[in-house]
Image (cartoon, rainbow, N blue to C red):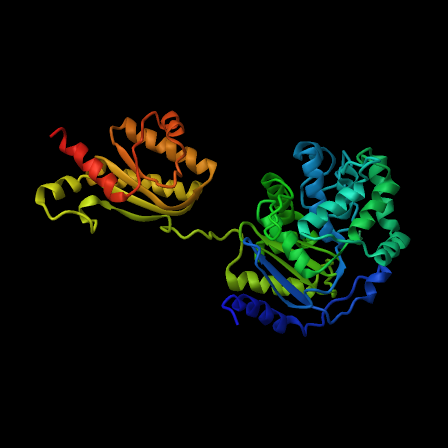
Amino acid sequence: MSAAEAVTDALRDLHRRFVDVREGERADYIPELTRSDTRDFGLALVSMDGHRYSAGAARTPFTLQSVSKPFVYALALSSLGLDEVDRWVGAEPSGEAYNAISLERRTGRPANAMVNAGAIVATALVPDTPEVPAFTRILTTLSRFAGRGLDVDEDVYASEAATGDRNRALAYLIRSTGVLPADPVAAVDTYFRQCAVRVTAVDLAVMAATLAHGGVNPVSGETVVTADVAAQVLAVMATCGMYNASGEWLLRVGLPAKSGVSGGLIAAGPARFGLATYSPLLDATGTSVRGRDAISALSERLGLHLMRNPALPGSTVTLATTADVLPSAPADREARALRERVGVVAAQGALDFTAVERVLFALDEAGPERAGPVVLDLREVTGADGVALALLHAGLARLAREGRRAAVVDPAGRLGPPALVRGRTGQDLPRYGSREEAVEHCARDLAGPA
Ligand code: GLU
């Protein structure tokens, strides 16, 4: 067995722990949903590298129901942009049940796209043309999120279509206030179809992982939505995804999540993982009981709460010293004395805003009396985002203005091509393939012309 089976074991453990919970009821207002097996309980986790782990009934098909909402909202946002979508559907937690008349008092605008009223509006916002009908776009998008072609459970669709008067009433009510951008009958029919799309817990975990991974499906590698849209959807899931239990969920579990009445539940750890459970027994808010309990337990056990800081301080800067203490320093006293005046900072990993701030701070501190040249060793840096790069350039430019020369060890060209560096820092930043060369250059500079 492989080492990574330990992750599967953690899911199996949760399965064992909660599979005997018998609390809750199946949703029966959509009659077809009562055909599900109440013993079914599946869990799945997908990492940002697209590794899939699962336990229990993770390949048992069921219908998306409300778990479709964040993904259709993502499609509406991708098609129209946040400002336009926001005109039709808000982003405030309603504090009410999923099927409540959660409409803004004056405007009639639904509270958010995670409750039925707002979800119907989000569906109505999806472009609908004779060449590409709205539902085709929705099914294609859901399939891209899952990384495979999904289909509709026609029986569940027919069952909800036959009994879904409350949703039709909601649609007409919204239409009467002028905030439904489509025909109510057509919009609700498309909405019922999207709710009846068939998935498994593994599919859902991939879909959640795609949101967590900035809109790029980590299994297929396909960009499904932009990073901005993924972040917007996760934000609304965090505040509104669990209906009238959303605040309590964010407080205790701390993960953007979405539940559905067929028993599916997704949770996303931004930049970390996608998680999904399936178990049809629901609590009073319409959330799967076993799923709720298992995800809560996992979040607590693995410290996944969003508001906890996952970045370990000190893990970016691996060395902050002077060149005389490097193992490569020569024994010669004079050479050593020069090297005492050369600061050395080495960084590692991926540089974002948080990480680069540490590097800049270390650069300031480097060298005796915070003065003299400084070698910045970027060989162990694996990447830098745009924000980090701009800040690093700005910091190096400031250093130069204070008369401190920097020599950067950057064989992989993380700082960008020389012309870009000159443009940004206002100096020809010398760059070296090895730390020793950079130190030698700075020491020679200090010694002055021979
Ligand atoms: N199709 C369901 C409805 O509109 C979805 C609700 C849910 O999953 O919470 O009633």
